[in-house]
Image (cartoon, rainbow, N blue to C red; front, top):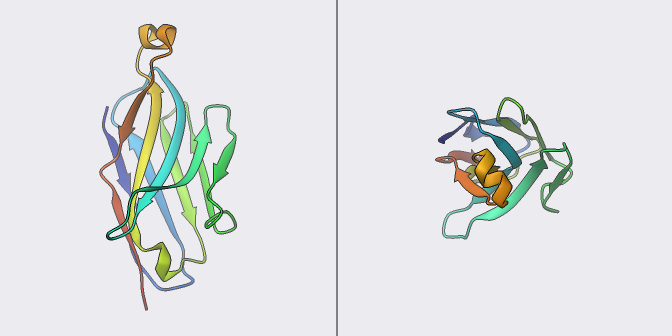
Length: 124
């Protein structure tokens, strides 16, 4: 399974971007779809998550500005980012936590897949 993230770019402070991430193949069962960011010189950190049941949560730093959405059945997730700030500059990674097969589901064995990252630069 490969995840393809897209939508990054250069945006002015206060602007908006929408990131998207899709899977290359159909996945047996997606547990969660998430976004993480990694700023220069920093560790990767959690941004937002959407569960297979549709519930979402996000980090406090983006809660009022970023919205995660997606289509579990079609293995696609979005991150709508509004009111972007220079501090949001980072590479954004999508993550799918999945059961890759019926066997894995029976064993409750999850796998993590990561996208290649898409760069978001917020600058005037």
